[in-house]
Image 1 (cartoon, helix red, strand yellow):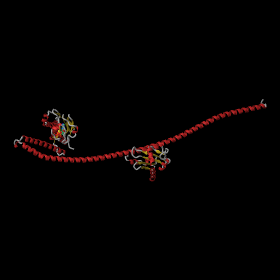
Image 2 (tube, rainbow, N blue to C red):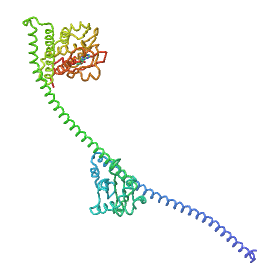
Image 3 (cartoon, helix red, strand yellow):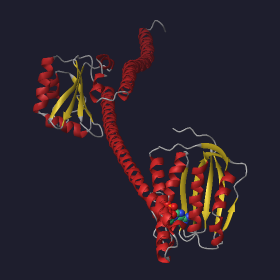
Image 4 (cartoon, protein in one colour):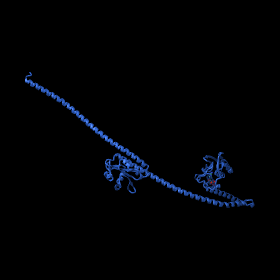
Length: 502
Ligand code: ADP
């Protein structure tokens, strides 16, 4: 069978087929593996790509973060500068001084290289330069000229109250390029200085080097700086206004004081002249009056024999009127002497209660005639340091008035109240009272209220003036409280200890 060539052919053909099949199988299996391999390679490649992307992202983020950190650092140091400057502005009360506080080191710390400040002068209708950091005289003059020529545009920027910078597009007022050319800078910020009142202006800040760009953060800082300059100017203006007002006030007070001093001197002169006049006239009057009274007395005396009744009556009238006149002249003389301080009080320590009782005794007849009730609750243990005869005059006058101006059956009461170093003595009556307007002038010489009692009873209007002068000569006080038809209370302060005259 094996020698059959056909069989061999068949066998070899079969073997070849088998080999082919095996090979084909191997190839098929291999290509499957390859496919998988390729797929895996693809996946690896994708992963690698992704990793690459992520790495790039990380690097980019890192750069961004670094930039942010840098920006942040710059902002923080900028804020420190602003804080220092604001404090310096707050303690500056002169407008121009505020700008002197801004130094080149502050500007460097803010990351800027050129700074200018211009303030609009309304009267001169032009901008004045208040600050220059980084420009020489010639450049500055060129800039000033350019601003002068286009001042309306700069005023418009101020009016907008918004910072203009090379970061944003042209403001529509002045093209960025023009600003860069005029101020010879790469980047810039122009921030309005707008105090509430007074002159407005603007702050220009710029950089010249390529590697120092103006950022949004810078823009914010410059805006804050300009606004604190404005605030400082406002404070300075308010201070100046207050200072001027104070100066004016001081000037007026000084002038008023001068006028018052002059008036007081003049019044003193007038008062002295009046006193001199009154005392001269009184003296002149007293002498003839004494003679008149003397002659009348002689004529009335027994030595002249019996006089006709009518003549006697007239002589008695002359005598009485002369007494009244002498009394009046004496009061007037006393007032002028007291006013001019020519009378010294002969002070001693006296018991108040007995002092008042003495006076009441003197007036007992008048009290009885009108059937008036006088009550007194003056404590027995109070002493006053006074001139006895003068204070008795005071009580005679005041209690006398209370009797005079109180209707029959009325009441008069004497009370006291302690006051430091003094005792307050009140003399109250249930009499006709004193109108409000009269209470203010009642202690002036010759003043008498227009009332029915005064129409009937004679008086000089000198009693209260004398009383006031005597009380004041004791460093005391006198005042009145009264209600018409209800009664009056005259109160005075009398010293309980020796008071040293100021
Ligand atoms: P005179 O009593 O001589 O008029 P005074 O100076 O003592 O002068 O008094 C001035 C005026 O004050 C009196 O005329 C009277 O109108 C008023 N006056 C004084 N004391 C009283 C009183 N107790 N009640 C009412 N009016 C009084």
